[in-house]
Figure 1 (cartoon, rainbow, N blue to C red):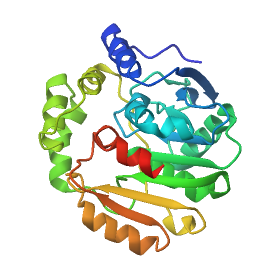
Figure 2 (figure 1 turned 60 degrees about the horizontal axis):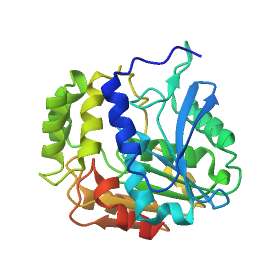
Figure 3 (figure 1 turned 120 degrees about the horizontal axis):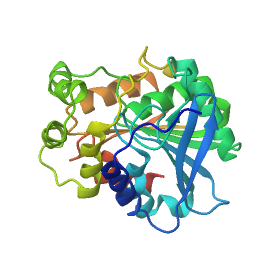
Length: 279
């Protein structure tokens, strides 16, 4: 295993502060995979159905605390994952980077195996995490009981050019100020949780690893999987209504809805009550 990636004490303090907002006892484990150790934060009854959640790009597992507090951890054993290579406490293996969609599938196989999640799993993801979840579901439908895609990007619609241009400074040369400015613009001035915002700003100093990109998931392969797709009405990354129409066309049997009044990046926080109700 490689040495831990550099993390400032302020990043770890912000991470712990965000995790400290979760309800009840939280079990944190490092799951070994061929691509490095993966930090998973879990809560909820040990014998409840497993709910595995992937964050968006640039975010961490701690973003799902609001969902746990809203009730999801009462009905499920909730496992929130730090993506390998992204901000968080997962540690990539030396010389074994995740470089392709099959690598992502193999990584998530190892995570689910390490968690003992062998029965039907509810797999959810937000944004880039939803892109990963959709690819996994297309390859491993038999492992899943349900797939929940939360404002998925690059699954049913592409990114708006204006959004990409606005995001580039915070992606190419991130600073706390650039991240804060971008999130204020994207959320259209909505009140953001201070602990979450502080952690997002602290991620500016986190070593960046280029995320896996590639084609859109083969959603036609999801025909036998119970799928729910939720879009943010006020998302700037894509047209939520247009993406919803595309999702209904691609997956006629899925439940597809647009959540009113919410933007993209903070959706797991701002719409936690609605997400918990649906779960």
